[in-house]
Image (tube, rainbow, N blue to C red; front, side, top):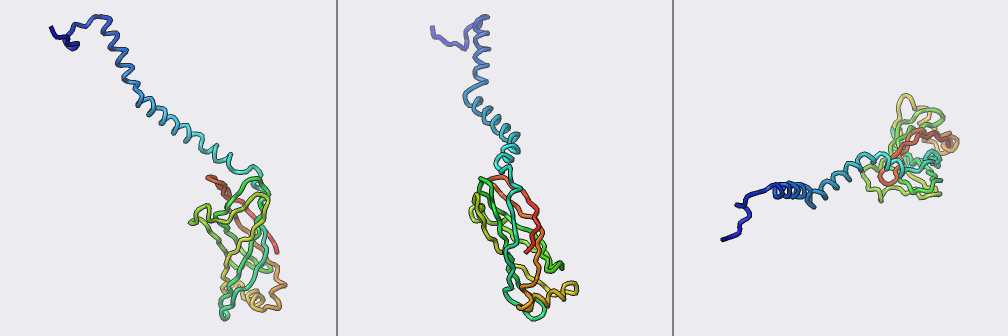
Length: 192
């Protein structure tokens, strides 16, 4: 007679054994790995804001930005002056930072010349200016000044090389500082 377990009568013990076997089959090795992977992703999502705040230095307010120099590149007739604005950024923290951009307003002798922006948002992190710990770097921004009714007097002063050195420059704005995967903004106001 052939032995075929499918056609045998099942007793109470064999039913209990098959129930335990079904439970074991439900928690197979693949399912356990899948459940563990889903749990790890869920924990990472929950703790991600905490991880991001840990990567930024706690003393981020000690990072300073100052107006280092403003120079005239060229004067185009009586309607446009191109300036180079140099910012000096000092990082006294123990963490290397980068900047993704500086948005600022430039003033000459109290007169608003306009708004400038220096953006590295489309540049990979390793191509942005590196703010190594305890160092100072200089970042250059181009700034066009268009002659208008509101700034015509200061426009004439900027055009003249003799009076250019007497101008009191001021910049106010926001610098975006990045550290790895986290980012923070810092406001600044500086006078030259």
